[in-house]
Length: 153
Image (tube, rainbow, N blue to C red; front, top):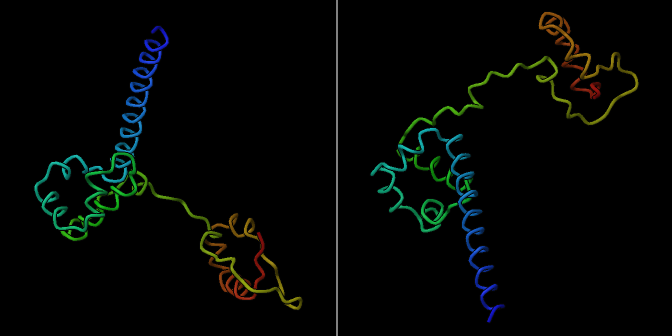
């Protein structure tokens, strides 16, 4: 009798822990979704969205209604909704940051081979250290080096 009582208490604790974990997973997924779609709260409450969802394939409906932990699927559903209704995608925090690119970022290093009789072999670090003016000065040489595989990491 005592072991049955202990088992029941343990089952209740486990159930509460599982519920708490599910809530945390759901909240984390919702947070990721809000980062990708800051207007998610408004969309979730809009009749247009639910009408749109009713017209979708059952798999897309499950992304919306049966999904509590996969922010990627929910985000994709919101992307489709916005595209179908011609709504401009909202700017996310990460897309509003301007990234500073060096000259090396503009140069592709995907080449086939290096021929020994070519002139200068450029390094990515060397190109990255250049100012824009220096890059402009050597742009044709760098382009030729890129074409012939004379840019190394």
